[in-house]
Amino acid sequence: MSHHRSLNKTGWLLPLALLLAHPPTASAQVPELDPYSVVYVCTGTGLLQAVSREVPPRLLAQVEHQLGGFGSCDMDPLRDRGVIYARMWHGQLMTTHAFDAATLQRRPELDIPGPPFRDGAVAVDPWRRLLYVSAPFSLFAYSLDPATHGQQVALLEDPDLSPPEPP
Image 1: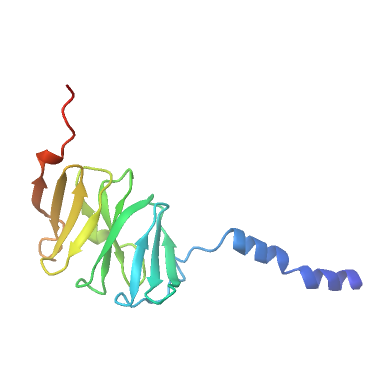
Image 2 (image 1 turned 60 degrees about the horizontal axis):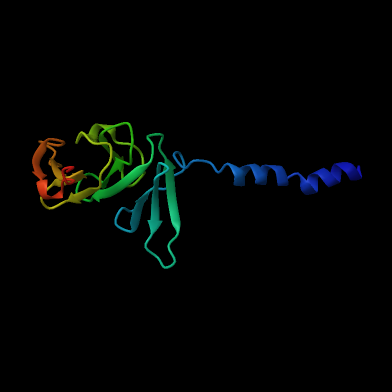
């Protein structure tokens, strides 16, 4: 009987250790977020996180997406409840991926293909309805307007930023 009581007293250690070693992904547990009261962070390990604006900040939710590491993300506050656009960092896919800002879930119907580079920063201009994607020595602009969503509308190339020609 005393052996049985001893197991009950320490029986919580193994489940706790397993939980700490392998925390559950938040894909099904993300609370409904207010996109205007959080800061979004994308990591090089493929995590999309929502962090409070408080001091000190608190992690409110995170989702691991099996797309690879993110290099940059920004939010379009005018589309639906908010759409986060994230670009891969040295990823295999040359796509800017879309996520729901309230749930952190994928919105593949809003993905924007291109530019033909595997990394680059993104920036949303909500008033002009544009998504800017930087690439080596160039800047691409894509439409966020629902009627023309994803269409490339501009390309700025700067030859002065190109690497010097070898002698």
